Image (cartoon, rainbow, N blue to C red):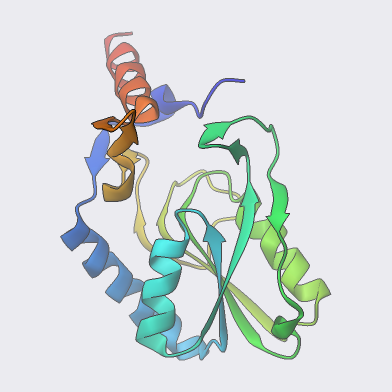
Length: 181
């Protein structure tokens, strides 16, 4: 199965760790008025902003895993559940958090499940969202249709050596091909 369609993105935006801190603070400020009691962080990368939010807002954090990936490669057409939402969401205001909302499908599936488990309110939030996400998150720190490269994705350890993440390399090549057509 092919990875995400990076040629569809318009440009490239590299997020630094400093950018991440600013975006996370912005997300916390925008989420605070909802008074979330539980943060559900969508693992893997959604745990970065989810942890920052849970620490900033001083509320519970539960990791969940809903993904199209196995061993960091896209293998499923639709997100599949790997780690379920805990029953502790019952009767609570819950924020479902991911690092990026591309299609909106992962946040929607997590929201539906949290509601089925009795959450009194569910707010969706992502650090970054593409304009075509449907549904789009209720709270987003940055809306961009660029190919977003997060600091944690730039390098991977392979055979004891740090290399550029193969998916990033492929995405950048797709951007180059897309810009010449």
